[in-house]
Length: 167
Image: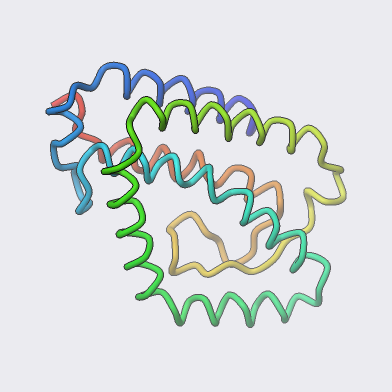
């Protein structure tokens, strides 16, 4: 299912960028402090960070469950600094990475994710860990590797509704 979700999001990302002119990209988004171009980068970022999230599950999924629970609590305590870095990173990258380059990056990361998911073993997909639920509305308290593979498209779809490219 993740394969189909990623491909749908990839096609939609292409379409969003191809149909947007510079004025539309500079327009404020709905419900964020980013403009549309910055929000598009943030949507891409959800896929880019997936590799790191997968690595966390691989490590913490092999440790006693209390270790990831404590780690998630620690990260939840650092939500304010995370929010600042999250905002500034997408703000800066959204202003410097061209929309055309974002499309290339999206294609590249999705291709890598397809290969990675295809190589996963069933036993690994069921491993999981606790996540910092205050960092993202799509982080559940406990997520399996399979759940984490679905995260970026949930994130993408949520932010897609905040774009004002068609306005």
